[in-house]
Length: 170
Image (cartoon, rainbow, N blue to C red; front, side, top):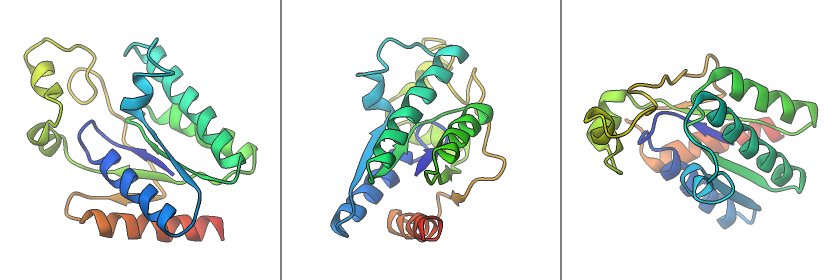
């Protein structure tokens, strides 16, 4: 389950709720959250395009390992570039592992208003460079498996994602 969207879109919120719901159902799941990974195994990477691609590829490798072990890998990662997300999907497909791309389609205006970490304000003030959605692009998925919008409750979003997961894995 690969959640992508702008910073502050709600990826981690919905992905965390999905992981919890899966665990409550007795299904093995593990959340790979972009912020946590950037403080750990991806701490050596910056925010250039090359480093963002490396970050997505590393997380994709971890997700494949988790899925190969029979668990649901729940990834919450901005993953701004369509080509890199497509490559990660292709790797999953080549290994015969399901891949469900979930686009958390929250408009930039709303993400900027939410600004839970103050990063949009820092980018606007010129303190933070290469910030996705401001001075670095975000390429929305061309054909996501699931698209969530900000009008949905977290529970509705989780239900929608679970239906797609169950369809894909049936």
